[in-house]
Every structure is written in C-alpha cells, then in structure tokens.
Image (tube, rainbow, N blue to C red):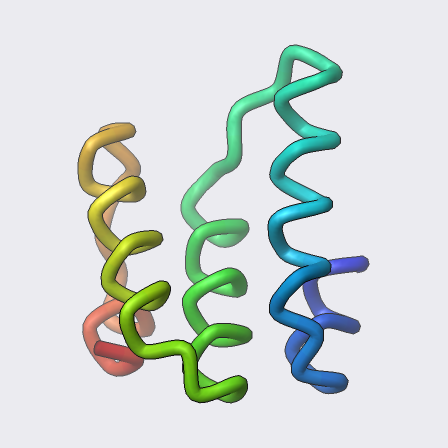
Length: 72
C-alpha cells in the first residue's frame, strides 16, 4: 500500500524507506514490489534508478513481467 502511494505522489525516496523496512524485518521484496519501485522511479524521472531496480529484480530471481518491460 505504501508503494502504491509512492507511485501516485512520486515520492521516490519513500521507495528506499519501504525497501529498508523490508530488509530490517528479514523480508525480501517480491516482483510486484520491484515493479512498483520501477514505476515510482519512472514517474519521478529517475531513469537510472529504474534500471537499478530492474537489475536488482533480475538478480533476485523474480519473474520478469510485461509491466517491468513496459516501464523500461
């Protein structure tokens, strides 16, 4: 829900907060989390970070969806 709010408000720094909270709680981001993170970065004009999150998503082994490629 927080990542969805970040998309609408273009709060790209919020994405890093969410991912940090996941790590602190011993959780790993899933495919939809990475997809939303990439969408936030795209909406915010942070194109280098779109590619960074895409790389992290691939490295984590998450299945790449059509939305991920659409964002790229």
